[in-house]
Amino acid sequence: MTELERIRHSAAHVLATAILRIWPEAQFAAGPPVENGFYYDVDLPHRISPDDFARIEEEMKKETKANHVFERVEISRTDALEMARRGELAALSARPTASRFKLDILENIPEGETITLYRNGDFTDLCAGPHVMRTGNIGAFRLTHVASAYYKGDERNPQLQRIYGTAFKNKTALEEYFTMLEEAKKRDHRKIGAEMGLYAIDSEYVGPGMPLWLPKGAVLVEELENLAKETEFAAGYVRVRTPHLAKEKMYLTSGHLPYYAESMFPAMQMDEHREERARLENRARVLKEKLSSLPTGPV
Ligand SMILES: [Zn+2]
Image 1: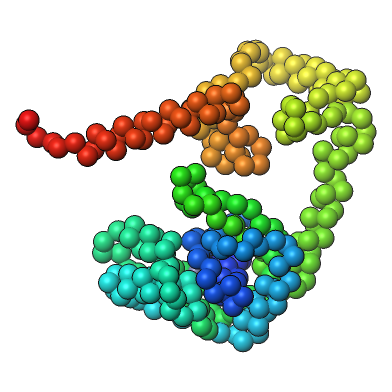
Image 2: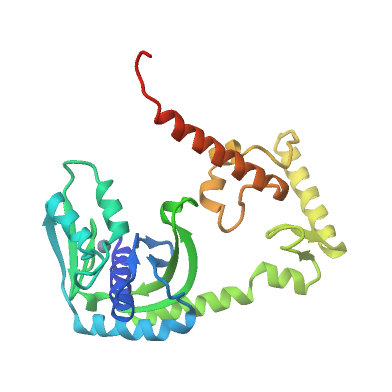
């Protein structure tokens, strides 16, 4: 884990601490660092919105100001399970309900593996680490958005609120990052392309990331295609043609589906088939359960 990732993941612990100060009943699942920051998945009756961010950040500031040590504690499986049942994991203290996601995570840790807890102030979490030394090492942070996510990415699991934020070594680096985002927004090809009359995008009827080329844009596309053909021809390449669409398997092999499904290329599903597919999947599941409950061995 890089230093920045350690800062960001540590900020996720501080985020959970802050949320629990406001909503002690919050149940946390996973909180890893991600490309531009971090998130923590939380199950909570209150729907967190950006309106809550200032209040949560205020609590987070108290934790970083207090400069608590991130203390690593090795613990036996039995003790960890006990703590989870008492609601003490990803929590500030014991609670009336078990830390159910942490309990599930614990139960899936292979036998013989070292189990560690991390403490910062009143907050204890089940975590393999690593973290920064102290909460004060999280120089600057900001919450950015909320999305929803299924536990372990499986739609049969409960839907959680995924709270995103970012953190940096210091305030200057944080501000530079948000300035860069603003500048990138001004240069967004989707914005510029539409302003120049090159293409239109209709996310609802056609799909996101699928430009409809207008006359000016079509000229550009043709010129680029010509240039590509000439360059390829000069370099001795010959052209082939392939279909525009292919089966899921190909996009899994190419790596597009696992990495770009959210932002660009979700698998295509025909609306009229979606219900039918869900019904068949459900039936398959019921049959499987029935089969597994049948007695085995000679009859
Ligand atoms: Zn951690």
